[in-house]
Amino acid sequence: MMRRPATRHATATMLMLAAAAAHAATVDIEDGQRIRDAAEQAIHAATSSAASELSAVADPTDPRLRLARCPSPPHGQIVGGGQVREHTTVAVRCEAGTPWLVYVSVAVSTDLPVLVARRALPRDAVPTPADFSSVVRRVPGTSALFITDPAQLGGKRLIRPVGIGEALTADALQTTPVVHRGQQVMLLAHAGGMDVRVTVVALMDGKPEERIRVQNPSSLRVVEATVRSAELVEIAL
Image (cartoon, rainbow, N blue to C red; front, side):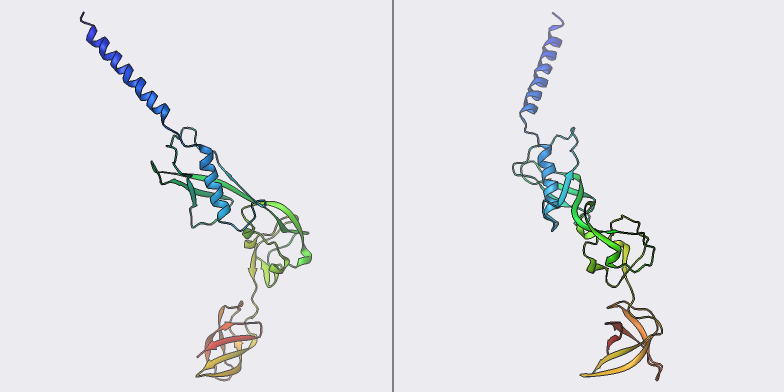
């Protein structure tokens, strides 16, 4: 007779646990595939590449993750300034029902024609179209990371070596100076509605649209002017 209260308490506890489990079983859990789809769609929306060219593969979600199913499709937003990289993190959100937020890593690659080196090229070499072949490859990241048009080589030099068979990346190139220190150039000065032209001497190397110091050899006056071409710099007085 003394054990009946304890027995009734244990039975009540078991019934409560069973009811909680039954309730949990009825709660809709978000499908991990919908989360991955949202992350991949965010990548495609942020690039200009065709779907057939760009591959975006989201990492599987943690199987232990149990989020309430979003009443509307979740949506993704690229973090880190919105820049698409080889490995891009996407924030996937649900803002309806029970809101939640998860971060998903997406592997990005692109099929595109890239310039592939026909021979090894040293640092500081001035590349020409003859140094490369156009080859379709699957490359990490997006087309913005690679040189795809020989016209992009104009006025550039290599800032690192490029091996034979290597796809040329944009960060391997640097614009070369078109004006060099000690060179005579024409200075076009705008003053009071008038244009004045005078020959000056460059005191430093300069790339297009870069500001450099130049000196008038007669007056020895030094001014800063903007490089417009290999023969012309410009200033507004």
